Amino acid sequence: MLKGVGGAAAGVATMSLAGCLGSGDGSGDVSVPGIYDMSGATSDVGKPSGIGSRDAIKWINENDELDTEIDHPWQDYAYDVPTAKSAYDEYTSGTKPPIIIGWGTADTEALSPSVARDRIVYISASYSAKLVKEETPFNFFGNLDYTSQARAHLKWIEQNDPGAKVAFIFSNTAFGKSPVEGGRQYAESLDLDLGENINLSLTANSAKTQLRKARNRNVDYLIHQNTAAPMQVLLADRQEVYPEVNVMGLTYTVDELRAQESPELFEGVRYASGFKVFNEIMDSDVPGKTIIEESFEREGRSMDDPSVANLNYVRGVIHALLALKGLKNAQEIGDMSSGADVREGLFQVSDWNARGLAEPFTYAEDDRRPTMNGRIYEVSDGSFEYDSTIELPRKDEWVGL
Image (tube, rainbow, N blue to C red; front, top):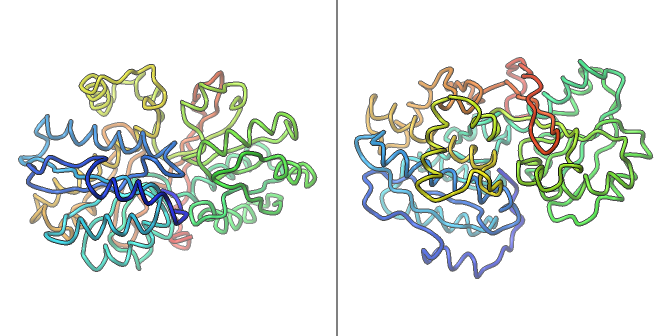
């Protein structure tokens, strides 16, 4: 997902590399390692996502979804790029795994030459449009890309409030900046009035200065690319500084934990993603619901605990199911222990909705964007209310932007 900020706690890195924070049991026949942020700057969203992937892989093994088990060693890289590189080196020092489940934008982009060289499919929680360029052939993700999430919001504004003024607010990181250039270009194509960009740190404890800028520039809509923690800071200060401004968040800015903790702050916030939120799934009968329910029961988790029972857990389940899909398809066409065959297997994925958890995904050799559909939600009384799905055009010039 997100941009690493360098220099994370060395103690955490050492402990995780020693295997103290998690590992597989070594008994599996195919290895799918994980590199997660369980304690770093983005762990507010990284921890439930990592738990979701690990729970789903256990479920896959218990339910014999493959004729062999998946071994899932994992490490907490604490949102530190060098630690992610060390974890990658450890996982690839012997027999190379066919797939790795990763996390941040900076570490994923930094590792992309290595995974291409080593021919390892890298399924990350970074949805940077740069990762589907020709130069990163082994990178995959399971969501609408960041820029197209912003495009979905912009299209909604153009349809519902065409005279509005829009500005981007984001952290000064690769993750934060990822949707801005392409988003601004799309806003201009829709003839929306654009304000100047505004920066808000991942570790911000105040957003008053940023909100004054928005107020002084008469911004009607802020499109926010960040995690849920700075989003909560932004919304808390909005009440005092600029309550009239509308805030629209991308995929990591809102989750059930924050919305339920502070429903009055999140009231009316709009959210875009390519997959469904937790309660929406629990209120349905889609097949993916069973994975979540049985995993929660097995692990003793509570459906009433939004620190885990949230959309980021769903995100992690989707990553595991995408890995499973690649392995199954690779087994049919060749060797599932081969990253190259897993990559080819993913190109057989067409109109696949991750067992009802997401918009339909399709991957092609010349276009690894899984979907161009953005699900729009509005937060009301601490819950997500589905609004609409924005279907964007699949423009070639948007690849990498």
